Amino acid sequence: MITVSCIKADIGGYVGHSAMHPDILALGQEELEKARQRGLLVDAHASHCGDDLFLIMTHECGENCEEVHRLAWDIFLKGTDAAKKLKLYGAGQDLLADAFAGNIRGLGPGSAEMEIDERPSEPIIVFMADKTSAGSFNLPLYKMFADPFNTAGLVIAETLHQGFTFEIQDVREHLQICLNTPDEAYDALILMGAPSRYAVKRVFTRATNEVAAVSSTDKLSLIAGRYVGKDDPVAVVRCQGHFPAVGEILEPFSTAWMVEGWMRGSHNGPWIPVALKDAATGRFDGPPRVVALGFQLADGKLVGPRDMFDDPSFDNARAEANHIADYLRKHGPFEPHRLPLEEMEYTTMGVIAKKLGPRWQPMA
Ligand code: F6R
Ligand code: MG
Ligand code: MG
Picture 1 (cartoon, protein in one colour):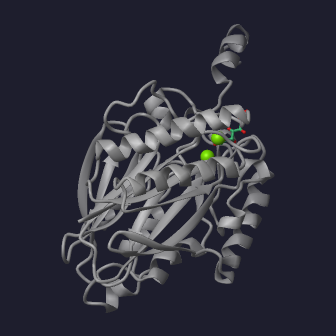
Picture 2 (picture 1 turned 180 degrees about the vertical axis):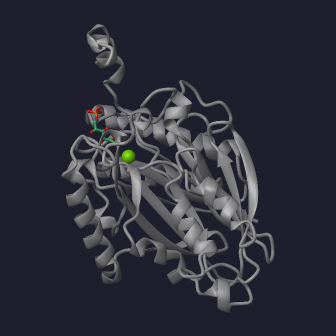
């Protein structure tokens, strides 16, 4: 069995919250390589989206392996030290705990892991997001695994026709539920359609019960109890055979969906699919973006990556995102561009309510 572990954190931005400094990325890759040489990892690849460092690792230690989680934590700590020396912005921003306590979960970084029996050919895609929240993958995952208008295989391929099971977490109550599609699709959608509370953690194929996808559902604001930055989630998706084809897995991103995040984590904005060379954020600290790295696994070795959105067939989605960005930005501080009062990550409401309190009069 091989485990694919993607663990990610924002440990300092260059410039501001826009991108990752090349020294930090290089440090991540070097530390992963050392862990590979001493035999902890089978293979590893460090990558980036916006100001977040993504550690993509394969190993034989299973999910929630203390040594692998400690490795990621230690790399983030070392990276934070390097970020502090360069005075990068928000150094160590996502490291919310003082010390490692056996598992990276609940400490700030996001993680998505799947233990798999590697198939004779094992294509996977790692989606890396910036300036958006855990839960943003709900819509694309639904389309990949449950929408026949997206995934033709659900209708015409015997291997997919039985449908998929969604493991959905209630991130506020720390509960989870498994719902089968297509039969329970409407039940699944009432939950998945509210991604700030319900986030898809895993998807399984009903044909073989194998895991098909996993995403990070760690919510920084719920861990810290206050705004500390956006979750900027990661998802790993297996392709072909009993799973949707590569093209069906990329297809949801031909539309620039609206997600929460963007400036100060307090706005709705279009989620733009970009090539790695465009992974840095810009306008209004965004728009929120997603990069897709494709790999073939070969006995755990990560053959790749291929930069899947470096493709003119996503140009329309990018143009759409820019149109939506123009339109939404005109709303300035008004909803639905700005998030509802209780969902904004930054707010002055408490202070203003106090200041204006005595001036409110009963309506005439
Ligand atoms: C959003 C994000 C940025 C910051 C913004 C203000 O996830 O990271 O939009 O919220 O640049 O940052 P501070 O408060 O650090 O100046
Ligand atoms: Mg940041
Ligand atoms: Mg970020």
